[in-house]
Image (tube, rainbow, N blue to C red; front, side, top):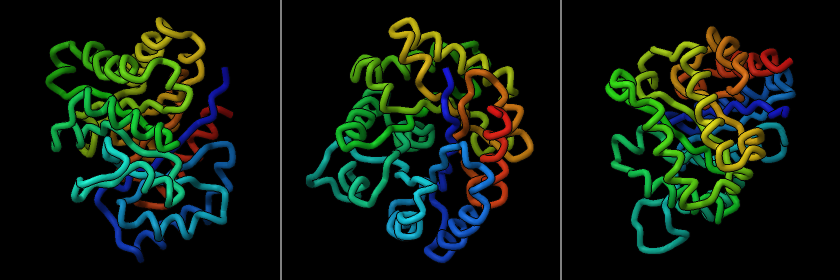
Length: 256
């Protein structure tokens, strides 16, 4: 089954209004070279209005949030809800990023609730799963990602994957310059798809699974050539327009 590649840029806590405007302009200037790839950018909350204003009329690039609260409204100072993101035209939201899990203590149960909150707000969650270096070295990679995935599917059902994206992001490869080899990444992507297939073969065939972890223009093609890798969740490289576009083009060539 053909799955349209998706490349999503996670800007993390970076940018100003001026920097966002320049970055968006640079991406738009070269995006026609990646016409067959779905492209999304996820800026910090405060920059979503700036980005949405510049992208709203182009119809070419989507935008989303980096996180959301489990509640739709209420007395939760400092939090952002799914309906708020949707109100600014967001179509995606990152859920369970390793930095949320490790730095902010988000458990598998919390991630499952955030995934549910995203879908309730008509947002597509980009569900992140991945192991630490210690877990990989202990041979626990499959156990960890299966646990993280199962928490979401048991709470929301395998049918929810029709409105979701999965991103495998080995924690040891995020922002470190280290990247899982194409073979290592493919093995985990294949495993995830097999675990989903055990519940629903059609859901497994349709769901897009992205790779995230120090993806660059120089290694994107080799990663995206793998049969179970459907694009990337891009961190630092998404802050440079030409580098991000190179990654987007690599997704085109890989499926061409």
